[in-house]
Amino acid sequence: MSFVHDVSAQDFEGAVLAKSHTVPVVVDFWAEWCAPCRMLGPTLEREVNALAGAVELAKVDVDQAQQLAASFEVQGIPAVKAFRAGEVVAEFTGARDAAFVRRWLAALAPSQQQLALEQASSVEALSQLVDDAEVGLAARVRLAALHLQQGHPERVAPLLERVPTNHALHEPAEVLRRQSALALAAQALGDEATLRARLAANPADDEAGYALGCLCAARGDDEQALALLLEVVSHRKTRRDDARKAMLTVFERRGSGDSVTQTFRRRLMMLL
Image (cartoon, rainbow, N blue to C red):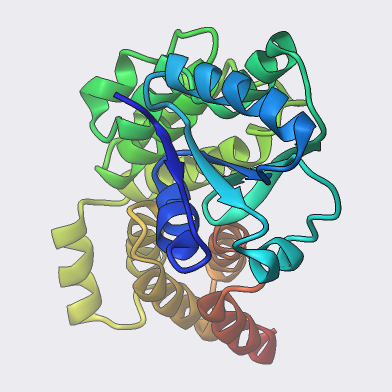
């Protein structure tokens, strides 16, 4: 089976841009009259086919797709560009030997462990990857988030102990730790049904409002969580600062550009 295809300007969007959301697509901008293109082409095709579908190759004849080549700033050929999620993520120009092409493609092709991590969506699947040398830390962060979402905050901190402070995953791990701490504190004040009953009986019950807000935040029900916590802040009682800090944790996780963050941040600032 070949993973090499001739692609025209008309089918570029589907065959390259859309396809690159599921598998990296390498585009070889070439022409029949180009001697370096004829040298590189067979090497590219052989090495792509050797990866058995981990990467695909689209060959674009620049003489037949001049406008397309210009839109991607192709100034010399062969020009090789790798697309992932619709964007160029790597490129080179000129003929290269097989060793270079093999290394270049290897950096694009996800490993079996990376593929396993992408497909893992259950506690069981992620648990099998937490000690893997390549994807173990990422699996730990994803598993911690899943445990938190499923109502098991006590399982979060032990999973994240191995994430180094200088690692790119340290920041999201810290947010999960803070969320789990909020959820554990909330659980100590009662289960969700009891907390809702307390609030129904007394809407000014700050302990119940704070605890319920934290539980909602821990499972990702952010708008309800922020509404509950904002109400606690407005009461100006003993849990006011705790509720404010809990809201900041939600803001941090969602990001400053998020519309929910912006809406509730404005409301919070009006109360402070």
